[in-house]
Image (cartoon, rainbow, N blue to C red; front, top):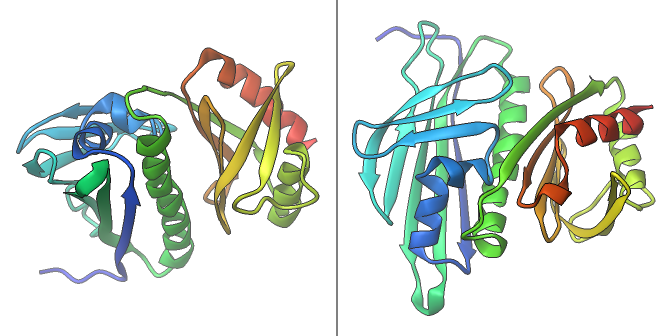
Length: 248
């Protein structure tokens, strides 16, 4: 087997949620379900040997399903590229008494090259946010389907300043922290929300009608990667204007 310079990685996540295995399976094994917590648009051809297709900012991965055990286990991943790059996702669901469940996800693969550190850091931060999104979705929005809204802001040179500016726009004195109560003003409408996830490269805000996700783009701009459950939660044009004002 060929050896490549790079990083073999495995990123585990686990959460106990007030949701049934059926609700979790719908979230991870259908296109509309994945759209409601992950990035971009997604399509699933279910069953062993099926395919999960994604589409985000011109990137269109196609991942083969290698395990399909409804309500229990789902595994899919990309083929290994010539430089050794690959990624796979394994989901495990365990139902509990009282209508709760434990959902686990292990993201694993290989990042090629001697400069894998920055990409790995971005992948770990983004992956942690999206797994938290899954838990938030099945807890607060199960049975509803979101429209993904993806918008790229202007390039950012000072991320500390940008995160502080985001906090100010949300009604805070500085960078958002988990548990902060915030307000989002969008197109003349103000909505209340709570910061449910924060790490060095991401912030997540939940309102009654949306999961609003802000990510540090890999060598690029701030990305708004939202999941909106109501037309009033905003579209791409309104969020493009919002990000423009944030960076001004």
